[in-house]
Length: 465
Length: 148
Image (cartoon, rainbow over all chains, first blue to last red; front, side, top):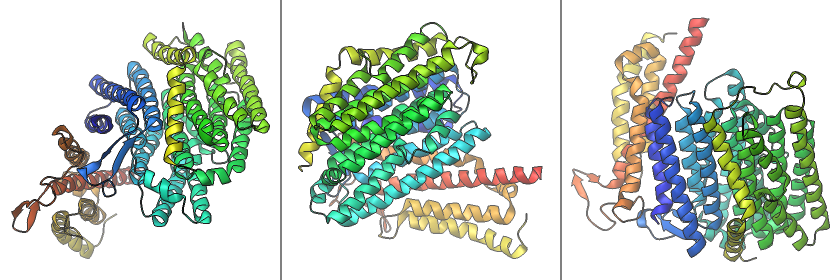
């Protein structure tokens, strides 16, 4: 039980300290890394316990379950929380080792970690919203930190578009409360089955749009490339690897567990939207020259895969959505962390990332794609399998184009200047560690697959169709 | 930019009452349990009125504006303490003391319960954050005026 509250408390405590001291000092780096490490370890322990003993819950204030706010963690929340925070930790380590340039970035990073952790560990929709806003506000701040004009512009776009998404989400929460009389996720899932189908469908669509904006799904993606291009690589890695998980988690949680009937009704539309996202992301990625931009559009494409898996539905589809999301967030973090490094090891590390995104074994990405194929075959949907295959082939093309434009061409002929100087060893080591994790999950995927299956099983048991 | 004498007179004479009202809301809110958020907002509005009437520099001389971020973080720390101390003592997070049903300590009509401590934390957080934001905006405005 302590492990549900403690990670958030540790992170908020460290955030308070970091907000008061100068974040560019060495001590600040130590505090941030220590807090993130402690919280990540706690979340891994929590993940182990959930995997062994099933979901854990605690009601705040010791109130009866329907009065107090429930903090509840199941396999889905635990695996997302542990992965996201581990990625935030890796990104923070990389920037601390290189030297932090703005006094506020570390505080914002740690508070964002607290928000991310909190939202994956709560069983109450309103506190989910609060943690979600905490993470998003810190993300806006991180985008604007250092205050150059380009960063401000990106942060403004980011904040405005995402506040519209948050606003829709808040409206949907209000409507859900009006319709079901509760905001406790399990209770909502039970009562949602008796809702007027029109009301429920409207709610489901609003939630889909709200999370689509966060995830950067076509056609709600406009903010994403601008932001990923403006911020430093480590912040882009956090956004793509950890913050985007909010969208994937929200879609699985609200679509798969809370409103599964509506997801079933809209399955074709959801798969179509996912397909368009995959195609659009891939085509745009192919047309871009800068590595960062290619990766940003590739994220839009990968958001589509999550949606397709959800549309396929059932335990296999949900498990595929979870496995793919986790593998994908590791891939994206790895690519963003290593794309702009030069020096020994970095080419190999980046190669691991590209092959993992393309789905070449042995890598975590292979099992992500394999789970999607399995879901497509299981649902007997030939169109989906073709879509996944074409998407995979396109991702090969744009990933190899990164090599074509950024690595193999003579330096003076490149459209976008690439860094020349060799990165510090510490930075390269962080990227190498993430690459090792991606490879390890490719060689021994059992834990990832098992937790995905467990998450899907828990979701489908909780919400009988 | 300077406001007229009437506005300045009213602004100055409203500062103390706005803090008094904030304190009242803090301990006895709408439904009698206290409301740190509204109290913080009311107190911050009092400060903002001073800035509008007298300009940021004059207010910074009278009020410790530079402490605002620290006040906010102290508030957050207090609220966090109320969250985790019960957990350390083996209870649920945010658990009340004294527990429901038991008679709390009274000072006059003021009940001493952990919810009040939590609200004081929220009050400091909202007051500190609002004043810090207003101050940042005022400073940016002053810098712009200097350039112009």
